[in-house]
Length: 262
Ligand SMILES: [Zn+2]
Ligand SMILES: [Zn+2]
Picture (tube, rainbow, N blue to C red):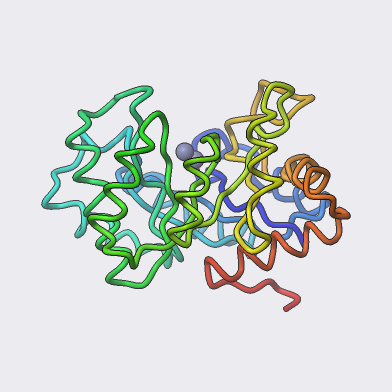
């Protein structure tokens, strides 16, 4: 039982061949996925029924990504995401966070939109899926301020350092590893993957982004999550079967999902 805990298969990149993508995932043993939706993109929300039909094992997360924080008014973000949660039956709020690498939205706006979505998730007792880039200190501060110690969730596509990993785990968060952990120069990420407590790690593809080695570049897809799992299993000294079971158990606990065979 493998699960890809972060992919964007309701995006434009998968419109033409989603059923083939799902077939390849199942063939690779990936029975489930968390599909991340952009709450500001009507077209993605409207694809949800089709994605559910193509892949009954999919669960959804919906939120306003920091790149799009400038598109919404702070006072409206909770209503927007709340409605999207109801419409899609999503099990998490995300991805949300801060991205100071691209700075597509002003930082104060990113922080406010992030904070409001954390409050919403806490009020509904839902996990959050965090995107953070070059914004470690502010990300932790917004989590603490808006979450009041009650926010839970995952730092997706973890590329931070050991200090961020420890801060996240101390707050009860999970870390999710992506194809970046397979890259030759990513030794520090593999060290975090070896260190993280057994019940706090997940794996993801972030499809269509981030193809794992050796197929770097091109469209990524959920069927490749096993490459990431392979790396995590190796550095943790686990068999692939044990690692798959642990990754599934961790994801099921965090997102409150259960598989077709459970
Ligand atoms: Zn992201
Ligand atoms: Zn993503």
